[in-house]
Amino acid sequence: MNSPADNFQPGEILCACENATIDDLRTLVHVQRGITFEQMLERTRYGGRCTACLLDLEHYFVRFAEQAASSQAPASVALSPAAAAHLPRQPRLPLKQRIYRV
Image 1 (cartoon, helix red, strand yellow):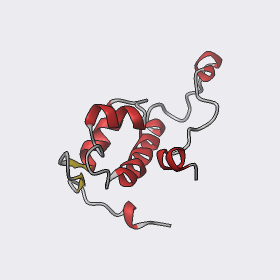
Image 2 (spheres, rainbow, N blue to C red):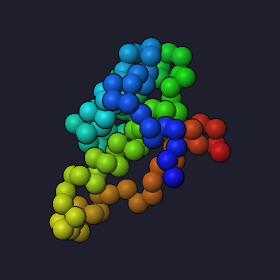
Image 3 (cartoon, rainbow, N blue to C red):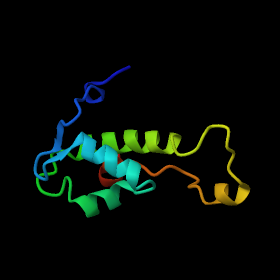
């Protein structure tokens, strides 16, 4: 099921305070694989002024991070046990849930 947030236009402004587009966020996530949402917020200052875009930022960040992770290695390549040991065991809660304990 598609949500309105899934129907974005390339170049659409995501954070008006920092003049950041969806393409900027997509590029950042794909270039800096493994970056966390909090690290992205600190480095870019997106969502730091009025905070109106934080939920959209998180939505697209998670979506683009999943895309980057799935394109990182071909499906036929298996992780070694040593590499698999470094993977997180539990996914972190989204920022909204951590803030509001929803």
